[in-house]
Amino acid sequence: MRYGDGIPLCKALGVRVTATVFTAAASQIVAEKAGFQVLYEITYEELAMKGFRFPGITGNTKCSKLMALVIE
Image 1 (cartoon, rainbow, N blue to C red):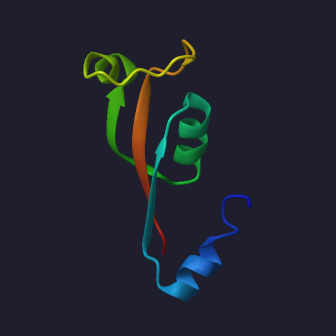
Image 2: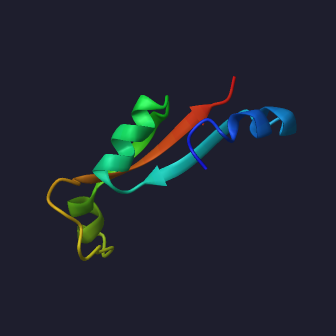
């Protein structure tokens, strides 16, 4: 499913907002271009200090972002 494909379904079902956690820099950029707004972000360094480690995270991804899209 491509972005936008689910919008008519959301409207038909009365879904007014959708949210997800975007973990990679590339998906965060695409989400912002699609209209998602950042609600919260935390760096992987901060998560590691709290005991949550993510092996394999590349250098270009600094944080994880909770993002939401309002369905109009």
